[in-house]
Length: 315
Image (tube, rainbow, N blue to C red; front, side, top):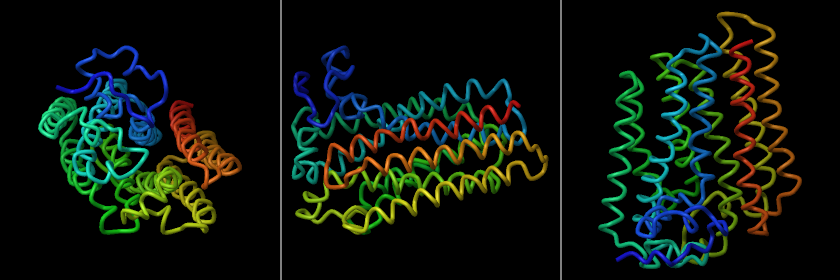
């Protein structure tokens, strides 16, 4: 039986899973990282971007309320399923890393068979939500499973596993755009590319927490690849994110010039970049606590363009 009283060392103290979740479910919710909601936010925010960017072209629809709510539920479920798959694939690696050895699988809180059942259950519920969308969005949702399946193994064969994380985590920008518009066009593609570069930024910071352990066990990451040159790379990722998202906004409004909407949307893109620039002023890549704090700050950063795009779509 799973050990409900065991905890995970890198989860926030006093999280809702440890305090309020039913005891039999706690190990499984920890497996889904429900005790660390930042990952759900980082998966959800590109969905919000996609809805708002599509609305910038066509205006909001009544359907978009369901789309936003269902994306939130779907992000929680698919992040949980993805983390479960990641932990199944990485259970031996996690056992060798100080920060992750207390996770449910390497610590014995959950067995592999139970984890597999839990993963499938989450994915099936998420599929029920996906099938309420249009055909293009459904096809995109099914296609995303390939990225989810590949990601845990990327750190074994490339120094750029953060690219694979970005491809998977920002797929919602394309899916949500398609769910609103019925198709994917260039603004959505550029928005997706911006999200990938943003992921390179925040997940390189996150990976610096495990840099030494990863080196000992041979796990690759951009944190190890960049090393002492990380900061210039991070500045480059900030610039790339802002430029690509700005181009997405400009293209979205190309067919219906609207100066107030354009200025407001681009202001949100600028503020997004400014927030990340401020993060850099307090980042110490040699301090795991600093890396984790700055990584988590990207939830608030990602809300900025979502909010500005949504307001620009209704002005």
